[in-house]
Image (tube, rainbow, N blue to C red; front, side, top):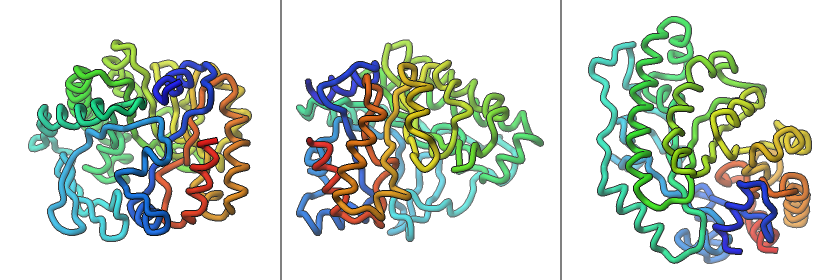
Length: 332
């Protein structure tokens, strides 16, 4: 089987010849790995036998050495966190959308990004990616605390903001779907480790309808949807299945009992992740890493339904020897 065929089989809850996998490193981790093993960033995905390639349609540019301005005009300070950063100033200080505009869709940039990936001769599963899909996008503009207060005090504002963001996302998705991709990946964090940031009732009121509308054109094309959210979102995983999400990423084992998760959702929802970057990879030794990979695959990979991966981009506190051990285990 090719890498693409393994991912498709896993998403369809069929047994591939072996479990597909994916790994991504934070920038500082990547540099440490390069320094140790001589593998450059451009060659890492193939070296790690990644089965998936993400084509990112979340854009922006650096306006100074450590300041990144995204496509919505939000400026992120990356002086400490080199990959995401912290919002320097929120654009929507008031619940007034009269001067708020979504970005223009850059069709040429989309074409260039897609064609570069689909024509690279690697038989991987190639999927479009939108990060900060809805809730994260809204709080990056408004501020987390203010947006959560708006859920109670400014409902019309929240719905209008979410509607405009969703309209943009759908227009972007429709443009991307002109190209022969294999699936779509979206990210929008709804949880912390004890539960959901806004709770399931508010999520169903304010987010679920827009999320369902966003994925409609993807499902109409018959393509799978992989959805990322950090934290404990067990309360809405049935909702994910209901609106057509095929795979949940990331599955944090410090939150979920993997055996119970597989028993409850196996056959209905595939899983992606489950090797902890928080409480395991920074502290384990290479032998323990290889054992953990085998154990996790034996739980979540039964009858397909699993893409083995670290729970997040691997952070800089993970020893590079553990990264190499994980790669070796996944190759075998």
